[in-house]
Image 1 (cartoon, rainbow, N blue to C red):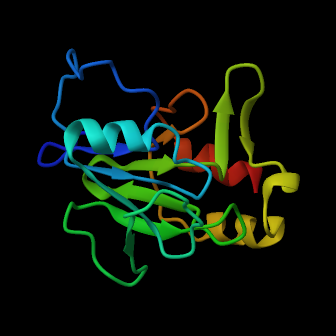
Image 2 (image 1 turned 60 degrees about the vertical axis):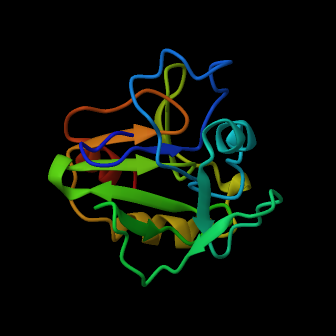
Length: 161
């Protein structure tokens, strides 16, 4: 996600073979939870990037950097831990764009619509719902699974709770 200053790649999917065609030069890789290593190794190796994840995310890849939930993020993104989801589940909020990035806590699949992560994939479904209720107001959202929402995203997600 390019924020005008720095470029972070969230939960990367397969990288183009030589990286050509990318409209940006990534600065780092950010994993939204322990299930989203995806193609991080390829991106890391190809671009020489650091990979970052929450301290409680069980990531098998060596050399992953860990943030502390109480430490500020120098990129302008606000990390919002979402306990109750998969390990290390974290949403990322960019206030200047009223934009929230979700890993697994909320999905927006074309075939199913907007929904919360099914209970069977949660460590504690009620705790995850309570965590989502504490999110700040936001207008737009991007999801690791599904299409973005460009208007009233926070309101639509709140209606699910």
